[in-house]
Amino acid sequence: MIRLARRVLPLNPHYDGTRLAVRELGQRRFTPLVLVIIAFGIANVVFSLDSISAIFGLTSHAYIVFTATPSP
Image (cartoon, rainbow, N blue to C red; front, side, top):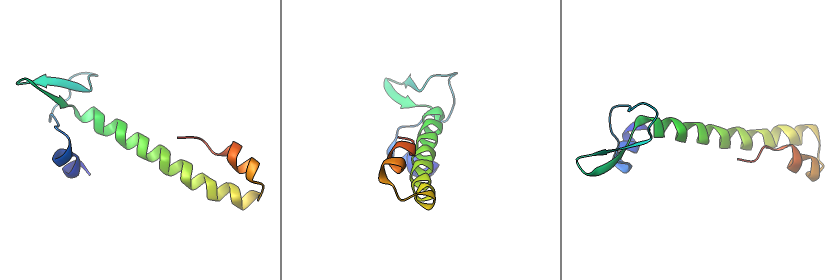
């Protein structure tokens, strides 16, 4: 995933405190912290999709499934 992100995003190989982007040689480059935030977002979506099937195991009422599923 990191190799793919390096092909798509202009990444700086070093962290710069809590900054998400830095200016380097006149170009904006993202720090590795952006990859961490993207990974957390993907994990949140996968968890949400996984919990839908778990709720259907408990009930078949669509309203309960809709209200109990965390929104991404």
